[in-house]
Image (tube, rainbow, N blue to C red; front, side, top):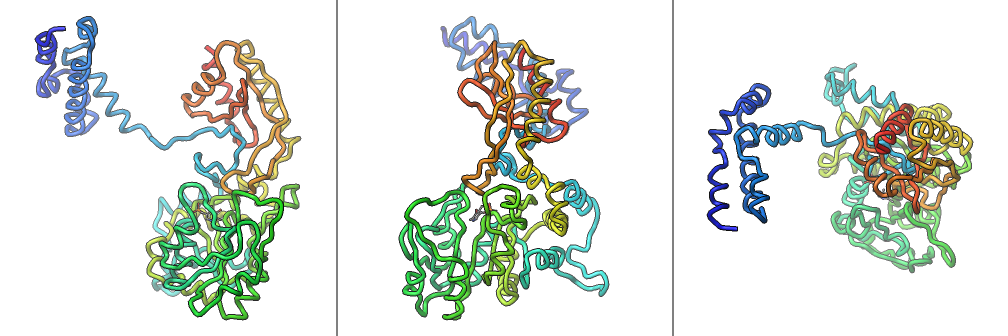
Length: 472
Ligand SMILES: *Cc1c(COP(=O)(O)O)cnc(C)c1O
């Protein structure tokens, strides 16, 4: 192709001023700011220029529309994409309850209502109403936290990673923190205990071996440089076989002997004993408190089923130190988090209600029989709407807790399995992901699995609609 041909095309592109005179662009100026429209016109023109430069043949050049009005569509699309919400609802059909990529826990209706209340109105976030004085944002959850956990004191920060960082900084800066080699864990997304420790300015003192650590290993490592004894709950893996670890009680006794604080990073942190519901035992916060640990940290949005937060409970002496530390301000929680957390904790005052109203707990304890019923209803609806496009069956499967909690727990469930008759299963998965709301499902061999455990009320209908469209 002649260089001159391409040049001619480039010359024919409308200038920004010309494009701004096009009626369609003038129309856009009525709804959007002039600056935004002008910038979008510039970007659309740049894009046109690139497509001319990249066109491989004259025929391809001819297909590129050059009139000023041809810019209207691309300009409108750019502006609308900017206005469209990027964070959107998705339907979680994976059966992974605390799904880290899908926003971890969803909140109870009560928690959502409290969030809306503090978002819409002024509140007593840091105001002591009875005394007309400045108040503390910690008080809103501390009372509940103390009551539920049995600890002397409590506070909340941005997330559990921040809780660990704050505690190590406040209790063991420029000192050694002793931890078992079996607990130097990585929690997804670059949270590694040794890295957090170096950030805090505490020196890591590893003891024992990967699979076995004895109390004597801790004892031998204690010196005048020691600041803290740390235990980290292995929330996303399990060690099997020839293993041994020191219990929290033993560590607490050792700490008392040497006057050293003992901290436990519980990870998920549950307030109800899930083994009562046939689930594997996950140590409760109350048990850690009873064991005498000085500081215990856990996440708000894992099995607790609340907002993203790092919850810290323990002895008043240490919690007060944490509250006063300069980092506390840097990792403090927002009022909306506090509102959601207060409502979440309040739900736990009556555990049998929490099991019904806290979505995370409700999904955890839902039985296989309940799932079978839901799966069967969903399967029937799919068959009725788009039966010819899929082979629909109900199959026994397992759901997972997810989110670095109960790593080996398999929650028996019944899923709807779809084998598409007209497209590949990967194409079906992509189409569902592209629907609005996006439906995220699991693919197993040549079938797509929809697990009712994490599908919320009312979402069945949306799934059937999306499948009907996908089948076309
Ligand atoms: C999940 C987890 C963390 C990090 O908690 P976030 O709330 O995600 O910051 C820290 N420690 C353990 C043991 C965990 O399981």
